[in-house]
Image (cartoon, rainbow, N blue to C red):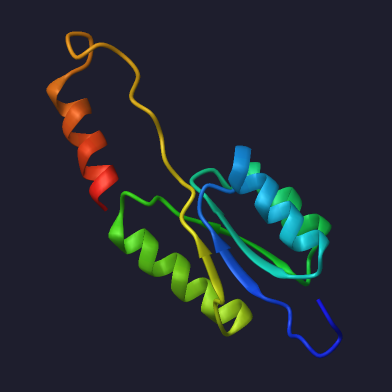
Length: 114
């Protein structure tokens, strides 16, 4: 980032572990701003503690539309804009079709479609 470029503002879903966590930490380390989201805020609070001016920990459950709207609005209130969105949140349903319930299959399909 050159001195003339503004830091980007990232909204990253699923920031508590894995790729989402690594991406959030990398963006913060290079001076960008991050709206780190997770269903369990205690797992991402340390980023806000380490980067109090550039990290914001926000609750987000991507299966709940109201939660999505609230997280985006909160991010906009904190940093005034969002430049990059990384929809990283997700889960895997593991098991043979005989081992999982119809509800689990519907929930997985609904999640993939949202």
